[in-house]
Length: 269
Image (cartoon, rainbow, N blue to C red):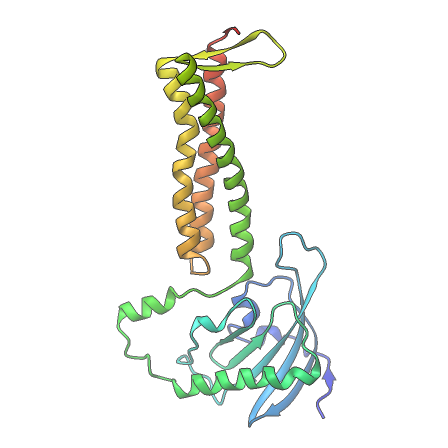
């Protein structure tokens, strides 16, 4: 009967490209391991503590990872990235197959299911070993660009999507208000609620005011397109952060330009 053991020193470093690296987990530390055999394969269950992947979680999270050792090391082991989903994550490196459900510790009576999942994946990679050696550069590039679910992209999407939605809504409301002023008065009016002074923007200044609100809105669709087409793909974090930084910088700069424009024309309301 398999029993829990203390993990040996350097256990995690002995794996070349394990699941916890694929998912971008940080602060990973093994608590215990269990070893055994299943359907002719050596396996190991590793209970890992790691930092939470959610934006508002603070306590450490525990995930049980099932590792099945392949018959030999090979750079040709390959498993399509669609095996990594929010519900369960299965991947392979040059020596092992990994299976887990992020943040979950399956009960021992369900371990057979997870071991079957890992062994089925192991048999798949053994069956397809070497089949992609003669792939064209385009096929190799396509595999390298496959989407692979990870929790960090979800957090990143929320990090940018929420402020973009909020500020875009405010800009649209201000544009509608400015358009209403233009139709009624032929100018954009801004009166201070506590004083009798305000702003009366006409001609090019009114156009500049409207443009300062509209330009950030033109950047948002590109970021949304990136979110829809590049999420979970390599380079998504960098690309979205660059586009988000451009949007944030543009919004900030145009806000101050708009304030300077408003303050340049003062008149009684």
